[in-house]
Image 1 (spheres, rainbow, N blue to C red):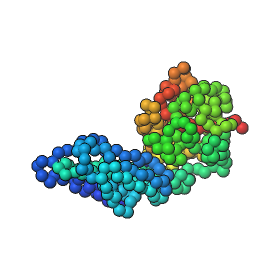
Image 2: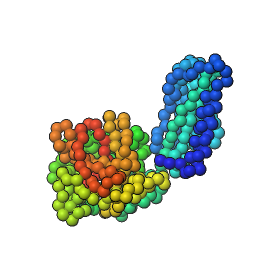
Image 3: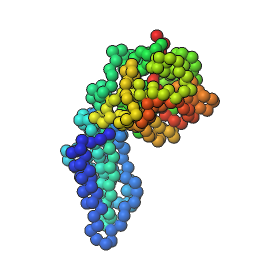
Image 4: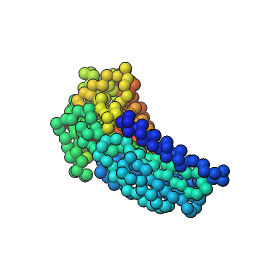
Length: 337
């Protein structure tokens, strides 16, 4: 998300100075390095996790390259040659942290690569603030993870997105993002490739035992409870999206941008968050802080399935459909009373 303004200014200034220094031309014979500098750091991580980063990626020159590490997570700069490792520990102070790898070699322009990591403390009131905290919860026996639940109409609903790591992906392929955002699942992974119909008639899919992926009829039951009269699934659900949106923050930054067209009401403590989507077999992620997507377990045809979505700048809760094995959406599990 975002730095505090002061920390952001000094961090960007430091990186700018570092880049200028790395690219300084000492004479007219210097050449450009080649290759992609590579190391792995997730965009979201639980506080306290430790990561060992390995410098490398420069192919030209093939020798004589010196790497240095700079990070807002480290007290000192770690220096070494090709293949050197440095270890960073994600702080428990909620912020966006940077790690920069800098390469230099005699006769070559220097080059840098910077990656970022958001520190996560997953409990309500820490990274996630402003959401309703229902009194009821259940524990998934598969991984011992707890979920808040709420009641609307004839069904109990998860009051947060499913985070079962047996399938799907965390946002930006960061598993720890699921502890706040929930995971994204394509329809096949969400449902186990089983289409559902009728109230409470969805498949278990990725949900805990006793819970199911909501059908079109389950979604209609929620809409009827919100509006006070029956609503078809194949309807735009005018004004119903804002009734489920929650004015929450992640690490101090609002999930939903301000819109004069939307009044967030968070009925039933449903806690709809703008957790985005993905495509291309969990390789492309987009829509964080802009959209919320939720699967129906009811297929449209043999290749496509229905979903509903909320856009930050509209109060509605429209439906659409997507191919079963591509788009990733959130899952809200349900059960009949």
